[in-house]
Length: 214
Image 1: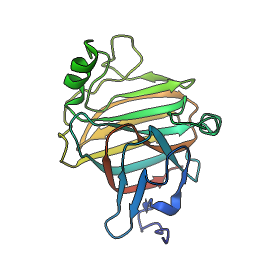
Image 2: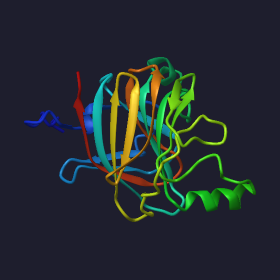
Image 3: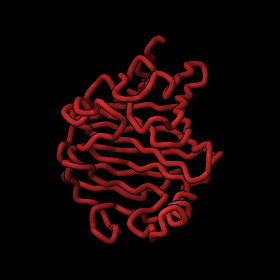
Image 4: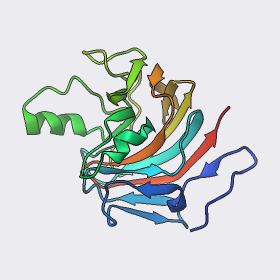
């Protein structure tokens, strides 16, 4: 596949040539250059990462869960050390996660576990993972670790959603379907790889593009 050059506004479409396998199987991810769709099987729990390290950038992507209660996410500013440590299925332990949940995930979680799912939402939580740190924007999760969205704008499985992520100088902000809903500041690390997450359920991404910022 030929990498698409930047357009006149500096946006670059990210395709297969821009990613590197980490701990997924060859069957986990597939890329269709004609439709710009990235298909993820959801198995095993794992990530692929960009070949480049990014610091300040804008990211635009559409995504669609194929089944109810789907789980996925986009990791930004993911450290090299956390990715090098992934020799088995699992997720990085140092980065900022922009979560992608189907709205039916909360009810499914409570049914499966018998526990209340009040520590997360299904509409665009932003939070640090593992060794990473972030000061999340309000409203906050009960333990203060997550930025909860100010609005619930996520569409259910089978429908396309749009994420716009702006990450600059350690601050990340997320727009879901045109509404700014969550984010945080003072992220550490404030630079790293961008990863797409496979977490147990099939999902499609399309029109994934990035624009680097000063």
